[in-house]
Image (cartoon, rainbow, N blue to C red; front, side, top):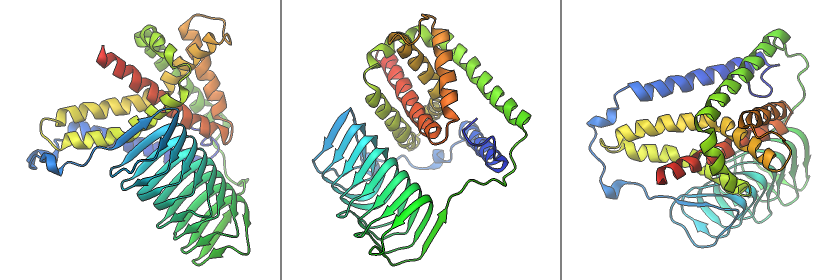
Length: 363
């Protein structure tokens, strides 16, 4: 059960509704005859251009790009003009160039000093430099957010700490949910300003302790059962595959981000032709299954990694995986750190499964 839902009944039942809707959409895709059967087959000239995909530890993009860009790595620098959308994730991200469409970025330390059309950003330490320009809207979620540049707005943000410095110019509205803020008197905010200070809600009614404990126990037991089945079926095969990945954490994380972002695009392309529709349905199933199994795959990898580094003394891959899963569930309940850990586990598990399936296909 996701962190923070135990003590908030409204969030918990909203979470369950979302899960129900996703399942309904899944069955709708599987059992409803596609309407595109009646549509004409798209010609090659009408198909969208394929995006540029880069996933490695250190990447600098310096040549102009006319299509969408997907970049993931430990350190990413974008210092060129991109006429498509940019999707990027990593440890340290520096965007210096011109992004003529949307910039969607997630990472640890993020610096934006170029020109962007629309900006969606989530990270630990996010800085919008004085020379930065955002022509359209900004959606931001960060632990620390420093705004120094020119933003046309509107701006919607959630942050633990917000700083708006002297050089900041916000032409549109500003709506912020924050814990702490420092807004300079010399900063210019032309539009409306609505800043809400986030406080702990002591008057919320938590779920009964026995009910929340039961839900957590059921969730843990179900994950353990799935983990045991997963290890029984492919554990011996995947353990040999993951050993070369011990020192490629960021690359694996990047492949997970790319798989999550590009698979819907591939499904869309397959649905454009009658021949591709069965493949699209199969790919939808694989996509959902990989998302579901991502924390399980990470537990298998992390347990084996702990053993290779002599943090665990057992060679039993079942015990290794169980220990890793329990450690993850413990970290999951820690505020802030738990949410970050969940995101990292999710992307890494997807990257691990994608590379494993790619290796099976090649063999």
